[in-house]
Length: 171
Image (cartoon, rainbow, N blue to C red; front, side):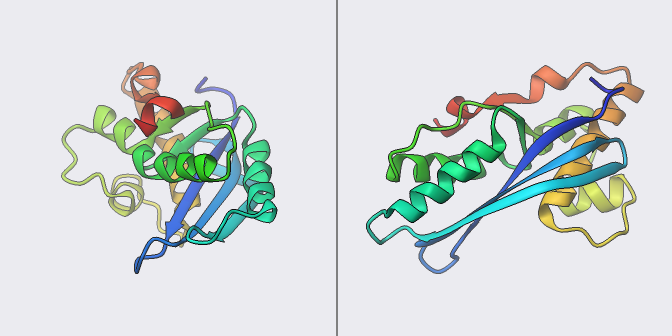
């Protein structure tokens, strides 16, 4: 697992801070290993959750789910992202995702229990010394690959401890 490059999907959910009626879901795939990620592709969906569902919204969500396919989904807060994706699936009458979900926050807690903060920016900039300006999904992907390397360097087999099924995350 650690020695080979792998392709993962990172989901970013943005919700209107005002009333939660505007929702954006973006998925990007990353191919990489420690310190090296490459964006393969990305797709987005934006909609108004107050309006009646329309075929365009459903088509966009299905496109995102097809794009993710069976890849491992990596998030920094599995409960937040999966909650909103599952809500959209229910609202648009689309099957919920059943992929394996890895949470970088949980991985960081297992690998670096002494760290004072599990904030994404703290972990990526302070712990791993990254100085490049990165978007949220780039940070999550890079942190994931760095944490896998940290676990390997410490002789930890923590991979399974941070796996969540998407179905269990929604509950």
